Length: 367
Image (cartoon, rainbow, N blue to C red; front, top):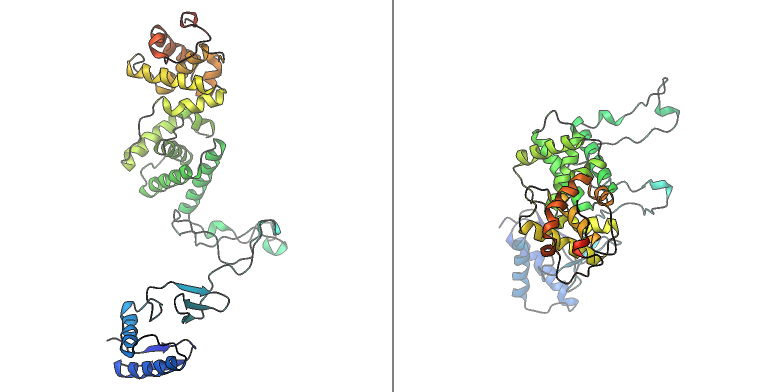
């Protein structure tokens, strides 16, 4: 039965010695059964206990559980180091190792110095699973040589690949913080950069450009797209280079992104312009109808959204100029005027029926 060397340990923590086979296992079982009888802890027949003991052994040789209640959850008492059955209170394991930190840590103690020696969180994106040695900054004369150079440096313990990944992740996090992007988008951008870096598909391209393109793709895939100009504003890379890396990454990873629409930007642009909800709904309706009626062929969704916001704001009491809208949307005034010219002749069909005009349609600006 594969029971050689198996040890029986009952509730009092005493060993009945190594068991070499079924016969000796029965002898040990009889000894435990007699002790349970004396303690009035026997609630069923001898055969049921013997069957339960074998069932426990066959259930899972590597699993710690109660022989009478194999499926019952165990309660861990870290102070005593015991594992206790929640059904009958039997101690099925002792000397449990506490894997928690050795010291309590408070956020305002020692300027962030953590006395617990369990290491930092594991980062699966790094090649070494973030288990490499990190040397802290030197303090005192013993940490520097005669020329003032630090004796111990991290460059010797960290590979160039991990260093490039860490720098790219730091750049992505920094860019995301500047435009208030959530952590889910940062994690997706980090994963995209890791795939590109491991595949070595974009050799010769700057890591900052790849990181910016990964952040742009992550925003598109998470359903909160940002324009190239918005990414370019928080990056050190030109819009043209980010666009090139964007196309190369999509081709290298064989992935795709959803097409952007006017509705993806409308709420954010109107919010930044301080426009009321009525104007936002009207601008959304105008942009959607203009696309459905094919009034603005070949125009980008951003320029169509900006022109729709301009038209809706001019018809309301909260008017905004082309320059104000262009600064928020990242679109030139000329681009807004060109899209507005195409939409103006059809303005009567574009506005929603329940819109309250502060300025009639025939008095809207003509370009």
